Length: 150
Image 1: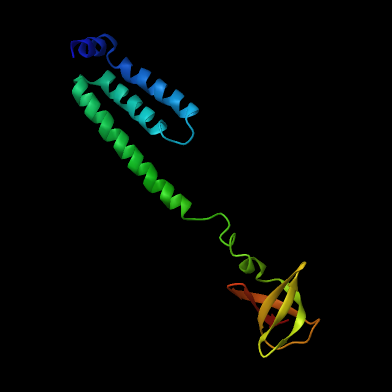
Image 2: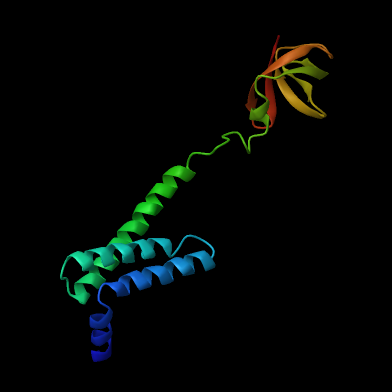
C-alpha cells in the first residue's frame, strides 16, 4: 500500500493523464468503443486533481462516477440514434415501390392479379383491370402490392 501511495504522490495528477493516454491507445487497438469514455473520465479527473487538492481515494471515486455517468449517457444517446433508420423502407421491399406506375401482367379479376415491376412479377390487389393496363402502386400489404388505375 505504501508503494501505491509513493507512486501517486510522486506523479500526482499526471498519473491520470498517463492513464488517459493508455486508455486512448487501447481504444485504437481494441475494436469497438469501450475505452474512450474511461479515457475521457481520466482526463476530467486529472484536471480536477490539478485544480483541487483532492485525496487519491476521492479522485478514484470521482473517476468511477464520471466513467459510469459517461457510459450510461452514451448508451442512452446511441439508443435514440439507432432507433431512427436512414432508409425506413430498407427491409420492406414492396413499400419501396409505392408511387410507381407499372403494367398488369395477369389481369386483375375479383381484386387479385399480378403486376410486373422491373423484371419481377408481384401479386397485386385492387380494382379489376385487363392485362397490359397501367396501374399505380398505392400501398403494400406484406408482399402484395395495392394498386389503383391511373
